[in-house]
Length: 415
Ligand SMILES: Cc1cc2nc3c(=O)[nH]c(=O)nc-3n(C[C@H](O)[C@H](O)[C@H](O)COP(=O)(O)OP(=O)(O)OC[C@H]3O[C@@H](n4cnc5c(N)ncnc54)[C@H](O)[C@@H]3O)c2cc1C
Image (cartoon, rainbow, N blue to C red):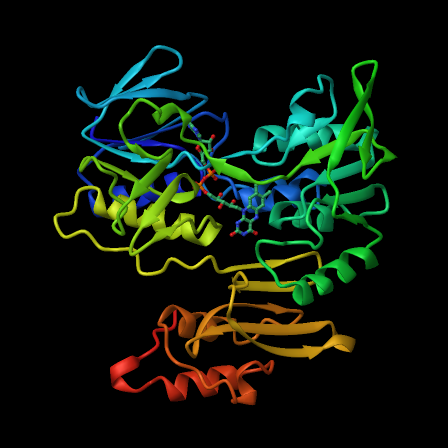
């Protein structure tokens, strides 16, 4: 076998397509622990509440490509690097010439949930558990979502329907604490409250009550909340346990260069599993990054002239069931804040600047100009903090930034 890929999430699938496209004479074998692969993980919240047609969930269907072999339902247990083989949990050994690791992330499950045995507690991470949630919630419509980060907030927004009673619990004092400033998070909070979602911040799930093997209630901030469903969205960590003895981990991290090579020249890695080392450590674990990295790994795996990753930002856009949101980058300590606010219209736009360069920001309620602001941030061009048009909605930012930065010596490339 030529190229083996571990992981059939978006990074692994894109790596497979890219490897086939760039190196058509090579065979690719992709293995994944789940029974179903090639789906939009980002659409699982809509899938769980049946507002997404099942056919729209998948971006890949088995193709007529005899050199792309997808083997679902198989878990890699370890690597035998001296003999270039992947050892599977079922005892099978798969030889590789080149290997791409794209095992993604696994959910963090708080101890309170781990200790509770019974039905009604589900992590929000994969299609297997999303299918279980889909079947479970019609009979158990009182839902508590643990975690007010991206996944928890998105899930709450899509579950806010008349047939469900949703409570969202976040241990920090604001929603999306790793992505938004308190001012920006306040708009998201108001939007969710308008949708009749009960929000509890500053507390976590302290205790879980089961009855006859099923979830009955949780305790949050000393108060009991009746619920039959607890969805856990308390973050994720790289799923790299199977690499423990491989010699590829540095301080527990699967470190890669900017061209996505591990410390083994025959092994590349991409997506939520990796930490990119490039004048610092980067963990840009987002859907767009997983796509970009997967494609690059598939291209670089046999290349003599490896391309580096051009962009390491965590830019992210989403629609929270009616509220548009683009995160350019999380608040940065010590950064100057430029803000534009129209509370009546539900619009808040902010940029974080350091040394006159954009280092983060968020656009809420009106995301126009996001592409050009992102390009300016990525190209590290200086912006004029006194330029009132920079943050105003519409195409003003586009005009200002593109004109100013189209000088030959510092040209912003729009992506
Ligand atoms: C509900 C939800 C909503 C999200 N929404 C957004 C969003 O709006 N925007 C955004 O940017 N990001 C979002 N994300 C995050 C985004 O989905 C991830 O960043 C992205 O999926 C990472 O892709 P990946 O291929 O690296 O990893 P994954 O998607 O985690 O795929 C890894 C695959 O590897 C397999 N695997 C793991 N270990 C093994 C093993 N030992 N053997 C074989 N197979 C293995 C797993 O089964 C899995 O299929 C969301 C995530 C969730 C869960």
